Image 1 (tube, rainbow, N blue to C red):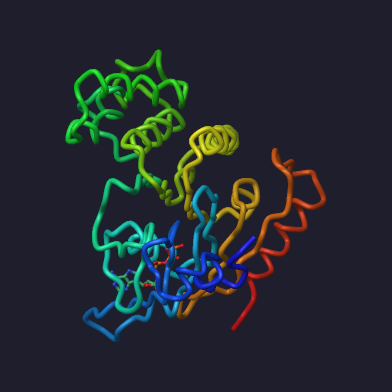
Image 2 (image 1 turned 180 degrees about the vertical axis):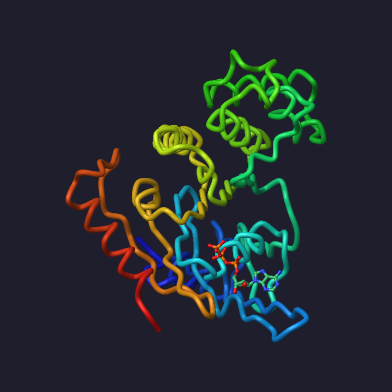
Length: 273
Ligand SMILES: Nc1ncnc2c1ncn2[C@@H]1O[C@H](COP(=O)(O)OP(=O)(O)OP(=O)(O)O)[C@@H](O)[C@H]1O
């Protein structure tokens, strides 16, 4: 597995990229990203020289202590905020704003309460150039994928938290993005639902082959899901280490290798300096 220490040059082994060929770069590359907030008081250096890559089809989790800049970095990758230094590239192109190449899922579901489940899922498709028939077929496919076909005419208020988050995932995937970006998506649901959603997300990932970048506070969640975990440190926010999760899927929490990875990541998060 490439990119062990978060150096984007490690991630794309295609020699064309290393020699500046650029156009053959794949996946996501976070390249020397820094962010300073200039508020009313002293400026806050939220991110310093953050570099790592996410390979096409990879599941990468981002963890770190509170205040290490996860949200800031997520917003920069999603094109919702500007970096002060460096850049993020998706498939070799700099990210300059929100794009349909990325499907974004937040902790709060952000569903439209006045739209039904199927209308929520189809929302992004309404502005695409697909025909009405193609849009309907895509909504059907997405509802099937997340197991909500029979709730298609329900409104969000009648759904559980887990169901709402499945709608949000279906909506994010409907436009067929290259990258699924998820910020604490299961943070608001109970532990049992969370584990079920984790299993379902892994099934969706396996069946769609999407690249996933998933931010979480929960180390066990990261070890359950990720191919690799980017562990961040705070003040300023930076990459402490990138951990390969060498545990076969499906992963069992009782497996000693699982516990060793959790312990290692916790140690890195708790480390000083
Ligand atoms: N709009 C802002 N203006 C000034 N400082 C900010 C702003 N947003 C974030 N910060 C600061 O930047 C740093 C990183 O914040 P950020 O919210 O990205 O971290 P986080 O890892 O997501 O935190 P948490 O896990 O607690 O949500 C913190 O010191 C925070 O106080």
